Length: 409
Image (cartoon, rainbow, N blue to C red; front, top):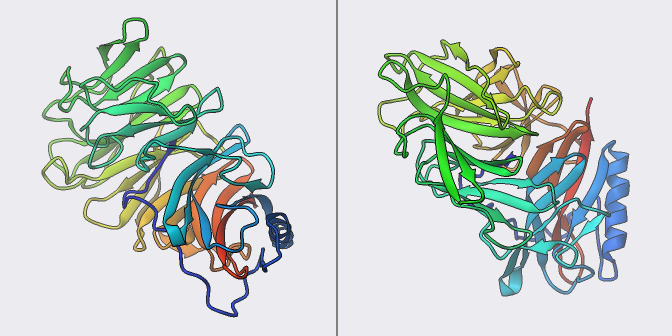
């Protein structure tokens, strides 16, 4: 399950042309250049920089007479297959569309080969590719995003079929997911039917939901719940939450897993410090992210309320350990990818950083240079990066998205 972390809403598209005379490496065009020629130039450029070119996304093929652009804002990799979501525009006539492709084949992707979604692509939703190679998502009707504080219901959408062909969640609030042939809902109990941390299971025959208490996750006056998040890895779902004992200064981090039949025991780390202020919407937030090297040992990222400060923890399978504390992300946090324990953060300034100690260090990948990075995705082979590129074609420039793989060191 791929999480979207675009809290600021839709990605702001870069639509201005480069300054006259500027040199565009990796695919400079002219009035006679074709998409194939431009893509081959890009491929040679990236190869010279020691990275692997995967594909280029165009809004329109072989059209130099209109200023158009394609911006990839989501990458998904599963079993060595790449999927993407892009926002395509013809700027002069304000023609816009959301396009996606699963299991990308070839070096050029366009709306002619990709699918277009008529449904709203909620960037705060959870996108993934199902067993039938279809783009699906679960979106949450929640002003705080992703069911994080237990408000709002969820709905399942199949974008490839362009339909809401899955259920809405029950009145309980929390996280919905699909495991095996069954829909489930993990609810912390706030404003829910049961009033306690519960697993809701949908009966596909009767279209009804039943519930059971989640073992080890108990709400009482000495174990106060704050925020939570889930991550689906293969056939296992991990659920992490923050709580505290007696005082907000006595914070704890917790995690539990569910395999479709059984829950694991709860693993807890105490002493994580203050977890926010009084009031349900003034707490530290938490989310899980996958480590490409050890998928079943996810990382837990905590944002401290009212700050641009993040702490990162790792679940080893038997314990939660602190990885790094007090990372200040002043440009604003957009996404995170962890490749072989190297932590990459994509910020709102569309630059890619590495975490070094408690600091963010700008990456110096020459294949990226000063270009904008719009999406990242961890893989077992390295880091997938979507780069927004301008092509100085004439009579009109255009912009594209290049997807490259930066191999493991």
